[in-house]
Image 1: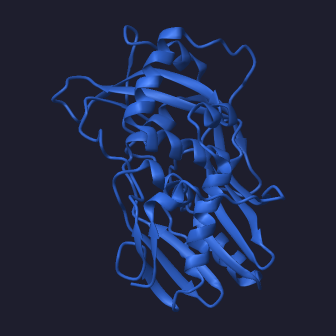
Image 2 (image 1 turned 120 degrees about the vertical axis):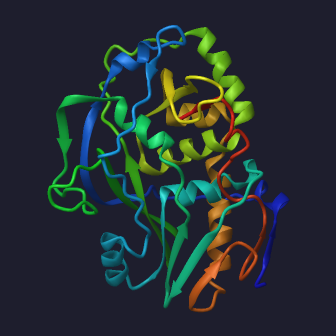
Length: 306
């Protein structure tokens, strides 16, 4: 064991970043969000489809050739991660379950990895898109093979300055383009449902919000999904999809960005003590006395959000 970070200290951490993150690279393609999903409700639901032939990519940081290129170009100390990993760390105080964070230390470069999640919410991200006009960036999806059908997603690489000699570079995801004209106010009853989900799935919602903040996405869509039958864990229906502005929603759920930065900064400072090679933040090399990871408390429930 190299060090410990007591759980209660996470909520007291704070770190100020004077300069906004810089954009390094944008690639992929996006379709527009289908606003007809805004009109769904429990009496007018829509079956959740499975996109078996669209490939979703969960590429680790060391296998990402864009990150490898940045690693070769940067001469300063750099931590490489994804928005999913950062949100897992930043929202750790809200979690009661743990997961592995693997850290590869190579010279003055640190690569963060974690296990992949399910494709439950990935299917939702593709179904709510509208066929037709697309936004195609200068560079295509770099993880896809030629003639391979891929999920519509854009990857945004961003860099944060942690201190004078240390930077953080992360790959963030954006899933759609939204036409914000004519946005309607949310129904009051949906607010009651959201309040219930905030109570039952605080960590999950906080992580999604953190990912939206990382990617600088203008809008975050929350989809409400339910099982067709309580005993049928395979088939689902979409009950509703609600949009939120990321900063307003972060304030609503009391997600403190300075505190989240402080958590990541403390982990990064700890990583500077690591020996070269592979290290784990699960009790082998670093003993972190917190639940860091997926909030699976409602994993087997009949209703969920995606």
